[in-house]
Length: 107
Image (cartoon, rainbow, N blue to C red; front, top):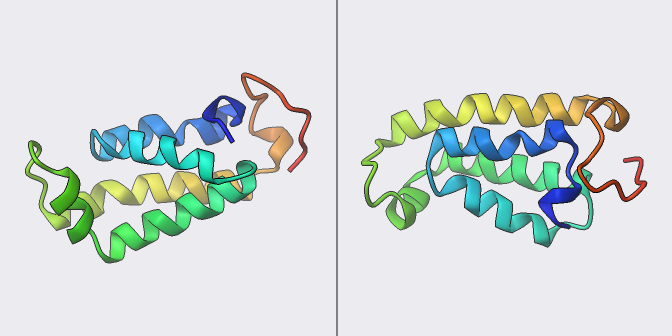
């Protein structure tokens, strides 16, 4: 799936991820191609965010060259992103807004 097929509410995950860490938006955006639809993208992204909350050290070792985030600050920044993903999952697909490129799905 391409991020262009996300509803506006789901797409908001990307700028929120950028607020967490500059590379996280790219990591999440690139992962969209691993999922066939928005529902699986949301579930997979939520899982990955929860894993980052539990185990941030590998991500920070791999990606945090310039920002110098501590694990604690990184975790704190992840919580609003996690909350938005959960809220998006709980919102009916039709109420999330129309995707930029609508494929006619009703998930």
